[in-house]
Length: 101
Image (tube, rainbow, N blue to C red):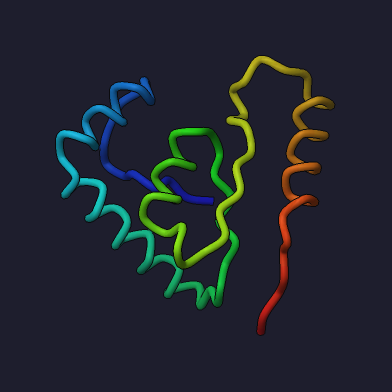
């Protein structure tokens, strides 16, 4: 698990998304760092799990043509642990996950 945008202290995802629209270079730079992280762990054809809608937007915009991206709700959502677990399980189960070595 890693942050797609690093080194930016912003609690509001809406404000962060606005900042990324104004400074696309910031998003591009962070996506390059993310690709380096994938290379470091030798990920081959990974399925990216986006925690929240904003992360899903960023991942699909930058990697949607290369990797499968599935979204799960952010863990800070106000739902029970049981409901969250069920939503995550259903999201991951419905994705066509394949392992390639």
